[in-house]
Amino acid sequence: MMRTGVEKVIAVKPYEALASIYDQVMIHVNYKYWAQYIQALLEKYAGAAHWIVDLSCGTGSCCAFLHQLGYKITGMDASPSMIRQARRKNYPPAVAESLFCGDMMRPYLHRRPPVMISLYDSMNYLLDDRHWQWCLTNVYDSLEDGGLFIFDVSTIYNSQHDFCAYHEEQSVAGGWYSRHSTFNRENQLQRNNFRIKLAGQTKVIYEEMHVQVIRSLSNVIDFINASPLELVAAFKDFSFEPFTERCERVHFITAKMRQP
View: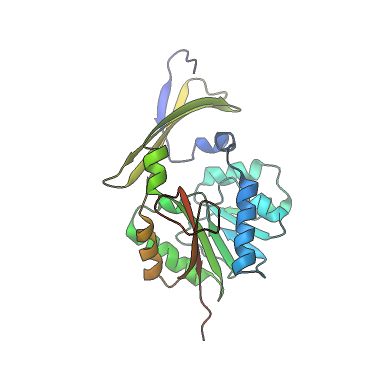
């Protein structure tokens, strides 16, 4: 990156600055394929489901593709900056008007949906055991009877092999960013340090520290078993194959079983 003059480094909350260039940073992610995989899971486990609530929708990319597949969508995200960026995109009104700021640990809605999802390792941002308990319990309370909660986690294997000592920097439409990632196996902390320079702000570099806890898959299953939700299935790497600890990502399908 070419730098001129004195630059001020300002620490901001995760996604506060990154939101403006997030879609460029994540351009490698095939959200259409991800939406199709969610559709395949729903066809197998909830064929009649028509409404999906995305608890960590980011800038709404997956929501838009799920809408194209015929689902009614509600999207929420804890980052106001990400929701603002989503609303700037050229989405159909049915998508744009469904996006709002909210906490996935407290997903209170006016009606109970048949399906809730949390994608792209957003659950890894639950740093404390209590956060998992609150999230899974409140999701259970928010779902209709028989409803599904589908979520994925990034694995220890992925952190150790791909993001233990990872660095990249790139100019993108709207600015520039660098990312330096480290993983501490002892405390299970994945740290992703972003430095971001936005177009038109030549004297400012924003710094964001994104922290995740990368738990063993057995630990995730323990959380599910301790919650009111029931584990229906879990699959590795966008497949219908059994997971192992050597997967990069695992999708969990959980259910709020109907009361007798």
